[in-house]
Image (cartoon, rainbow, N blue to C red):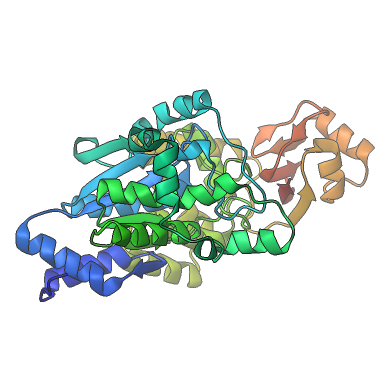
Length: 406
């Protein structure tokens, strides 16, 4: 790459890009690409791929989408790639077992909603939407074999999750080796300058760099973003773990879920999700250290997110509804944290969480209308709760934050 003197403007761009990021590889290359773009007026090609494995985009997805929007606002060309072909393989990233592949029909249904939801964050007028089936379907058996010849098994086995599964005697299907190759091939076809992804995608993104080199292209830089921890405070946000907030959820549901996160987790959400500057976040943190109620800070974040994905009126109404729901028994800032196995019936939850001394007392509390889950009165003693995190209330003063793990 031709050397370019790095200007103060590019240095400022780099600071913006690095905010909240986990890693930028290679930073010197990225600075040179940004400078060349400024000097020539040619925008960088920024790639983000998402497999439509579920119909909804959640707050965890928005961490990297927010970064994509920042690059878009700098004037760069963003490519939102829907992995309708790679979804049929199933991304093995972070998996300890083979991911069940989706059918073409499931993928098509999910993909239809992705563009509509992603453009709540990205500027739709300046976003190129592509589907990797455009070129992957055309490869055919011969093309896939030729692609596979450009990468060794030894390099593939450097991948941490493959190594652990192999050593643990857990089966690895041959088709899983194809996933990082196909994702890397997307970068070759799209001639991407930068590819974004979560930290669990680092290996796949590096394969893209190597394949671009094999095909004689300038190698992409990779920018990884942290994985947003889910509502349970333990696992990454995931629909399969039921610890997520969908960006199309109703305002009341979104507000209630945001209020259920712990005070410590709230600061991570601020850094990764909020549009506030780092200085503004630091000022809020200092205010809580000096006596400001963390609940008020959490309310502000919940309202910011609802305003973004709905509107300000919806955010104000969600707050009013939340306050009305808990007017007779405000949720305390601190409450017992209980972990149990899912699925589990509400009677057993009340007993095992110490909110009732016995199953009969739990049943009696439900009959008397004294039990609430996330602010909603429980009327069915047979209610079963799936994996997720819930605020359970008995009467006006007994609370517990219960995490059910599958």
